[in-house]
Length: 372
Image (tube, rainbow, N blue to C red):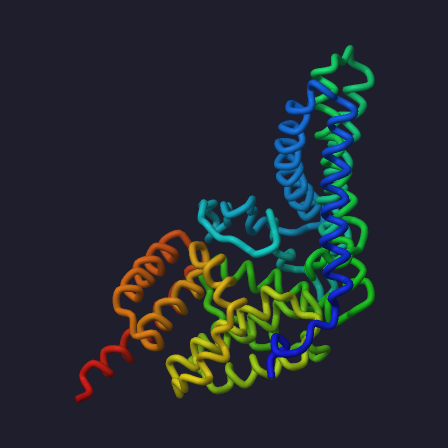
């Protein structure tokens, strides 16, 4: 049985994360009002804009650190907009990854050995936040600053300190590990370092339109298991590789095995597998009780949250509406969303697979209509 059916083993941790977020937000609001008084509204806007600036600076820090470490540029995402290198050309597409405001992914140097540098690349984002905050603080100290300039500079400096510290101090927030946590994991695990290298290589290959089934099989041989956030990425790539080869029975067995034995995998990775288990049930044995058990309220929420940017969610919604719910009007809407989503999605190999899986669902519906 999937871990979603198990009792939540970490309610204290989840409560702590919620309380910590509330306390930090409340403290920031009180500090702004006390320090700036009449300028509080300006300071709040500065904090909001400064946070956005530091998200950009954070990812730029990863980019600079990656280049200094010998990596090649692959993609740079802020919120749902991604600049991605495709066959030597930079293109702008749309994609979203749950729980992240941005992401800079690089590819190891082509002549890199088994062990690639990872510390500076991972820590570069937080260090860039600290660096910008330090520069702004120096400017503020040595300039003839007014109350207005202080109301702008100080919240931006504070945003950088929070952003830097929250990424460099090893933490998991809502189950998602930060950069410092990843570095600690990479320091302590050779299998995690192998997974990190494989993840970057697979992403770079996917960006250039290479399908998972055409990637080297040895990339996906994880002897150390998949029970951490980095190795979990390889589990997803391994699963997609089986789907890409249309090995649906193997893919289903693999997904069930991973969900049963990988408690520390990211929830977003688990939801990828849960969604595909539902899809395979819909196009496979099609047992109503199994579909109902898989189509949980939490999974419906995940599908709704990601359908605009994730073609696999749009394709699943189409298949469910067409084959499970038998709602032709909703299926037509879902089909439109699917076609719109793949038009802006950056990974051509995944798009080819998505079209195939969409075609399978459509063909099943057609064959059912022809039956007497």
